[in-house]
Length: 400
Ligand code: PMP
Image 1 (cartoon, protein in one colour):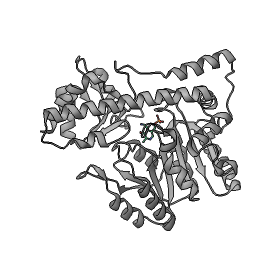
Image 2 (cartoon, rainbow, N blue to C red):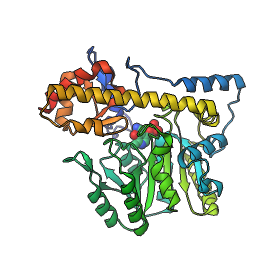
Image 3 (cartoon, rainbow, N blue to C red):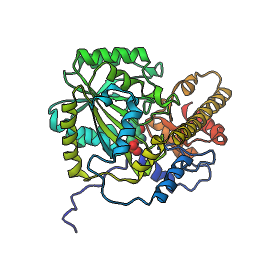
Image 4 (cartoon, rainbow, N blue to C red):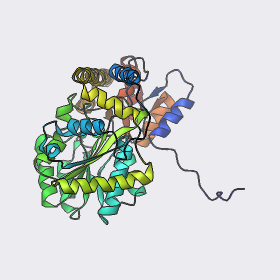
């Protein structure tokens, strides 16, 4: 007996639980399309060459392991805000960005949510329906009430723009709106530039507070610049916002936990004060962030040659995902020509959002050993050319 006998077993995580189940499966056909992690054509994890190069340089420099400041590594923070807003951004030059290095995208969102709970009491966070499974956990665990706004239209397998605008217009003044900076997870559907302009109009009119989640910069269009369009555009229009950035996907630093939470504000003094309070929050949670991944980022982004090399490797990864997207589409059309499969190639980023029901997803897993989240999302980053036919057959078996 234990004094903690009253603690109930928590359910497995809807995303990371899929990887746990995959490991237990002994079938030779098994395929893990659950978590959004890039794999090679041989379905092996991939460490970017430029990351290895940076690590070699770091080792040669014989750097120490002293604590970083609470706000993180200065060269990392500089590189990270420049990557997002552009090196010549007036917001950076005028000292209006409060950037705290944090524990990848998740930890950055968490510090942002804790800041909202503390300094914007009563503010509700609006998240897209659907969204990445962890958003609800993060806001709920931090004591921030969340509600959903319309985003996805299952009929068109596209953006429900009118629904989205109507829901934002109806949100209480001062609400937080969580926006995926690019490559929306799980739908792979992003607003167009014209639509971003209208979203900005509503945000200004209703005095809403955008909170960008930028986990896939470089994975939507293949260009770091293009993928930062929305936050750069909001900054140009002097909209104040928060933004969580992650290097898990674009630099493949998943386990290093490298990212940042920033507030882009209209006043340098406010930015200083906000940073001081984010430091106060981080100090009580994990004290200061890890150094290794931050050094990798500052090496890669701070060195022109390596930066170019990174872009090449990102292009290669995004290109491989695009190629399997096309091959999956071709295989589906060949097997079932009377169905409209165009959503497969229309969606962008790492995922394919199939519209499959939980029962259909279960069939994919139980019968075909294809592991995926039960919202119908397939991670194409974990798919190889040689498995496209197998996947298409399983999809058709499950959908029909
Ligand atoms: N936001 C979104 C939308 C994501 O898809 C992810 C990664 N799956 C994250 C944030 C955060 O990931 P990490 O904590 O590894 O940076």
